[in-house]
Image (cartoon, rainbow, N blue to C red; front, side):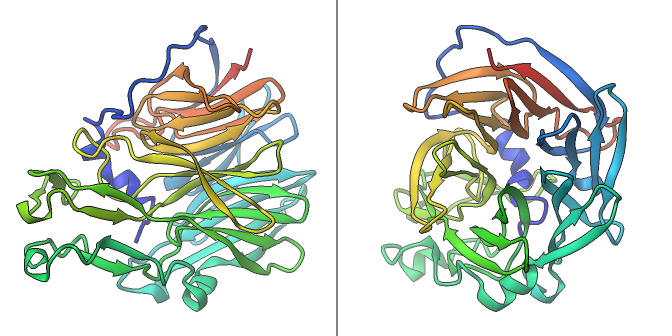
Length: 375
């Protein structure tokens, strides 16, 4: 189960990661930024919306928090029951839409729960759609193959660890993680389904817009991969060296550009490190027919995306320690160097971001929301 993004469970490997795609070009200006709020727990999502307040999801704490113009904060919604995760949000008019979920592991698909909810100006909460129910019925990536291909023998794979299946199809798993609202439709990036979904906000009907393609990587000889968060490791068998392993694509955010297309960040399953390099990507998804095109890759842990009015794309590189800028022509540069940026959003000429998103659980919460001028 990609509960709390299994991608985040790769911290052990990612802490030493380097961007194999080469460093981003130096930015011509180092933007200053203003801290809007601090002391936040796992602020993995930010939404600037169309009003004066900014919303931040303290995912693991199960809180959707409003940051007011004077810097004061208040919780708009909390995960229900206690322990549920609150993820991405978006606001249209006086209504805020947000995602809420809890995972039970791939061994118990019946224990999955995930919802799109709305909250109105008076605080009334409505449940619009159930993603776990949809996943159990349809499993959008159920026909998609992951792992090794037929070029790797069964004898070789006998030495492959059980915790990372050698060959498999998409499992029953749902983790609604980010959304973008346009008119009467919510586009949802589900990190468990490996899919982008369309939700009709009037009747709650869910459709699969697109399943992201697998993200293959060549396995190098001597690759050592983490097995858990306690420092356990496993050295892959030599016989798999040089063969491709198709990792899951794991969508982490979705934003609509001025061209009407959806920009979706993908954080591939498995470690991102010196051995396999920066394997994250941005896909462009056509909201009318679901066509998927790879738009940019070789990005280290892209977990948030926002598109400016001129078509420039900004991406939070969580373990890369920077917010990247891609022009509409594809030129890449560093917009801002910050520690562990998890998400970005844009309102007017300002970029909002969450930073210090993952901290030491034994220390006081240090997550922040910042604002920077786009220039």
